Image 1 (cartoon, rainbow, N blue to C red):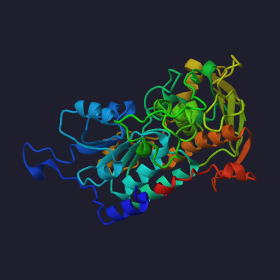
Image 2: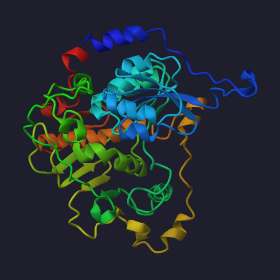
Image 3: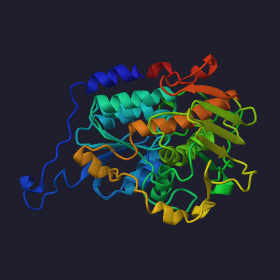
Image 4: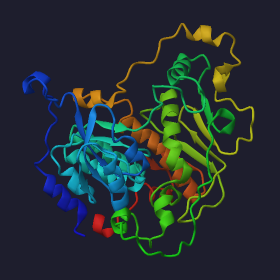
Length: 416
């Protein structure tokens, strides 16, 4: 395989095509203008990729997967004829694609997002946004350098009910912004507050080597990750291995933590400390944990409680009061008091509109990087089995070179 990044970026240099909006009347009656429908390329055609093949306002024109079986299954779900690729770099070179949907394992997200931005594509990325903290800065730089629109695929920052609570997230944001509970706040995500952390899918240590299926390009699936002999469990349960994911924290953590970050008004910062209660972790396989606590400079805390030992723990608590699931509180007349406070500010929650009008999407590269940093500093603390101090501005760890070595994951030689 040739040197990946240098040759690919050389090929796309000078080929970036800015997105233009042509009104229907320019093309004439009966023609569908780009302003009515956006074209999309999908990289990764597993469950996440297939879920959004037929989204309103978009038309898939190309799909990519390193597994020929998955590629064929996805193509069969589309009414229109699509181009198929087993190398995402070929998809990015297609000039008729407006949006790239990245639905691969997390260890690919940063490379694909930065190169999609350089290729002039807007980006829809699955969670977690990146596999490491340093990769998050790379994505921000690429998206903003090339003027692209970035969407992190999460549903509960402003729309609908917040996970596990049966309460609109807008209502929760109104409460935390009101100051009625006081400050600083502590938010607990555990079984007792409606947030289960499923640990049933664990990885396997000492995997024996297996023959690589003829339909799978395993070397390309590994991509930038360290080489390990093929075993089907690495593919089917990639989140259970440190090289590609972060266990249940990597799989669902950002979905839970991004709205919490929003509730605490922490979109522009990160915790200064993370503590963990967990068994010693395997160097290859992600293990279980009991509790992870993030603490911010102002004293706000996020507690991830896997065991839920404190059955009476509130969902949100402050010096003046507590909020329990289903919006039950020890504050009198909380609903009436909230009526006197403004609703949270509006944000763009329609990605097609964001792309057409070049507006920042509600979950974007900046706040997405910060909520993904929560996931990634939690992963590092788990891997090392110790509490860590973090600098939100420099985005590195204090007095811990072992932790700083995990800020980024070295790329395999052919992908440097």
